[in-house]
Image 1 (cartoon, helix red, strand yellow):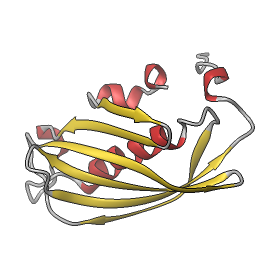
Image 2 (image 1 turned 90 degrees about the horizontal axis):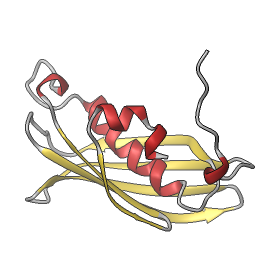
Image 3 (image 1 turned 30 degrees about the horizontal axis):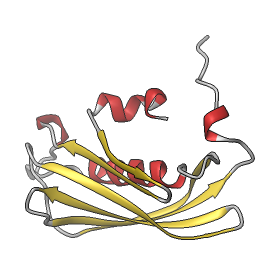
Length: 135
C-alpha cells in the first residue's frame, strides 16, 4: 500500500508499526505545513491521522475506505515537531469498523489530536489491488 501512497511519500511519512488492526505513522511538521498562527495546519494533522487509520483498517487484507472521520485538536504542533499517529481498531462488524487514532508529539508524548474513523470494506483484497494506471 505504501508503494502506491504518493501522499505519504511526498510528506515523508514513515510507517513505524503495522499489526492486525493497528498502525503507526510518523511525520515531521515542515515549514510549509504551518498556518498564519505559526502552528501546524489542522489539515496536515488530520491527514497524518487519516493515513494511520487507512493503514490500520487495511491490515485485514480487505480494501477498506473511510466512511466517516472526526478529529478533536487538543494542542498545537509547530514546524520541526515530529508527530506520530497511532491507530487502533475498536471493533469490526460486517464490512464496517471503527478506529481510534491518537496523534502525539515525539518524544515527549504530548497529545496533539484525537481522531475517530469509520471504515467500510469492499469486496477486494488489498494484496490484489492493482497499481493505478496512467493515461
